[in-house]
Amino acid sequence: MPPDAILDIRDLHAFYGGAHVLQGVNSSIGAGATAIVGRNGMGKSTLCSALLGITPPRANGSIRFAGTEILGKPSHRICQSGIGYVPQGRRLFRSLTTDEHLRMIDRKLVGRGRWTIDAIYDLFPALAERRRVSGVVLSGGEQQMLAIGRALLTNPTLLVMDEPSEGLAPTVIDRLIETCRLLVTEGISLLLVEQNLRVATAVTDRILIMLSGEIVHETTSADLLADESAQRRFLGVERASAA
Image (cartoon, rainbow, N blue to C red; front, side, top):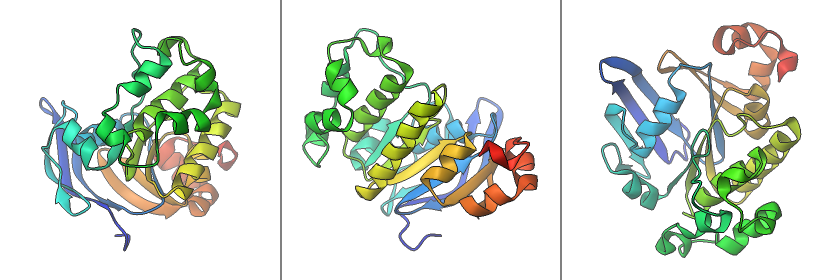
């Protein structure tokens, strides 16, 4: 367990109906950035849903954030406690403009830290230029910026990002990596859930590997990049240069 752990997961199980997806997850997340990597269907997004109180799935076990049990709490309470979420697929609203997506965040959350709407526009100038455009007609990269900006406006202590590089062009992924690194320097702890090994290893040195609903291995970016056997076994990567 990291000595500065703020999130502690113990014996976490999650179910969709009779399907047992998470099978006793144990891990701790501390300051800085941590990545969870694994192939499709290993339970990564289910873990995100369990952490954020999104139903389904049905979950049991323990999730403690900053020393307080959060498993079973509603999502808005978990958000208020200091966990932000960038969901897989961005989940933007067709009826809302870029600016409206940002202004929908509870003012109490916006007012409790350094992240304001102006700060988001400073971080992502492209969004400022398209503030009156529907969120769903933005480019893929701009949509991801908006999803990140929306989460940052809750001024989280921990930001959970589920597959943030999915569907993005390589140049946009480079900007995403820069943004993640910046957020860590700003003091935000980051839990990055990824299939993209290049992104995971570029953002953080601490890598957790998920297989069949469990965290089965912890390693470093350097060790994973050097271990082609582990890449093939856990990620389906055929050669280290894919990183």
